[in-house]
Length: 211
Image (cartoon, rainbow, N blue to C red):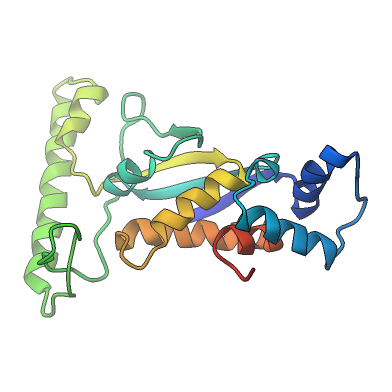
C-alpha cells in the first residue's frame, strides 16, 4: 500500500490569515510564536473553518477492502480506477501477518497468528484461481464490468483522494487510532506524514498535539 503526494494549496499561514480576516488583520509571514498559539487555540476550541481554506490531493494504492472503508469519509472527493473500463492486472494484497478473530465483536481482529504457512497458501491459490477465472471470462467475451465480479476484495485498486486539511485530520483521527483496522491505519499514517510536512503547526494541533 502506498500514499503519494500530488499537490496542495495553502499553508499554516493561510490558516491564521483566514482566522484573522474577521478582525481585518493579515500576516505576510508566519509568526512562530503568535501564529502557533492561534492555530492551537483554533483547534482546541473547535474553530475548524480556517483550516478548510486549504486543499490537498494524494494518490492512494491499496486493496479494495481498504478502499471501501476509507471512501466513507465525508467532504473528500474520490476518483478511483474503474474495472468497467480497464482490465485489471493480477496484483493482490497479502498481509505481512495474519490476525485471529477477536473475542470482542466490536474489534475486527485479535492477536497475530503464528505458523501461518497454510493461510498464505490459501491466499495465493485463491488469487491465482480468481484471476484465471477473470481472464477466462474476458476471453469468452464477457464485459469488464461483469467479469470484475469474479475478483476478490484484496485486489489492489488506486484512487485520487482530496480534501481540506480539516477533512484529512478528521479521517486521520479516526483511522490512526490504535484500535482501528491495521490496513486502514497504515494508509492514514502515510497520509499523515505528508500532511505533517506541508502544515506542521496545524497538523500537530488538529491531531491532538500539545495545547
